[in-house]
Length: 156
Image 1: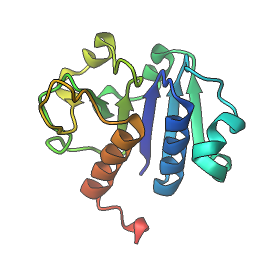
Image 2: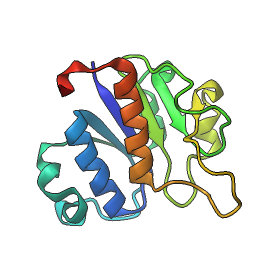
Image 3: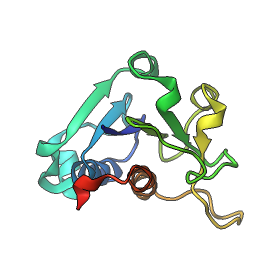
Image 4: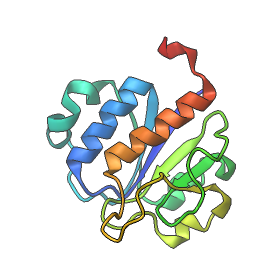
């Protein structure tokens, strides 16, 4: 059983640092798809991720295609504001990959269209000025729904 968080072209080091910490705390593997909007180094991540980076399982990919070739599409779930299906309305299988886009623009259509039935959204207030949650917060919402569904007893 593994938990997997995928960041497609993340832009902000502080968000990524928070996500690294979340991965360590939940036992999730972090998959990071280039290009990044920052230089990935312990120094850039340390401010928000503290010393957790040394314990993180982080895997890097030069493109989405490189990542996509290695994993099962049926286990990929695309978090996007463009979906009408809530993240709690799907069943996450073992070894699910929950995928998040860059902070400024979200996942592109070419990624979301790979499996439209697996596009999910986090519920938010429907107002013009509400675009999305912070990326690190969205990752927490997503990974803990996977954990809740799978009743992972190793957290007890």
